[in-house]
Image 1 (cartoon, helix red, strand yellow):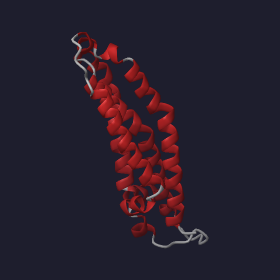
Image 2: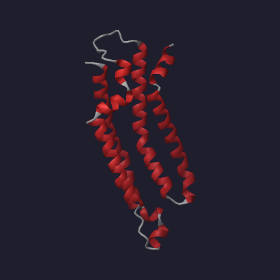
Image 3: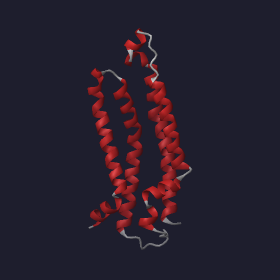
Length: 172
């Protein structure tokens, strides 16, 4: 087994974990948002204006999440090329114990960054929808969730992109 094969297995497991995490947290929150539509948009209901914003965003998010799941589970080669695993690891076999500590650190940084990204992506999407969908008086409360989740997503992308440089600095 090569490191590329190991990453393919890890990416598929992360995709499965992403699906489970979404159905545990994201879907119930969206159902709650649709059920409490009259609380978030009371004026539109009084004026009998039908606002399709929650329904449109739910459909768009479902399509985007389906594409992410499909990519993670069935098209892992795209993610492997995106992460440039072949460039950094080549065809190193796992049976070969001569893998340096820097490569182990790089693998750990990539895995932790992907897991952080997976945990924060549904929170970020939900915070963004709520932030732009509620009245101005509630936006101050929701801005802290949006800012914190966007910072964590940014840091996870930095960890994924610069994993080789970070692993070199950690192992010095």
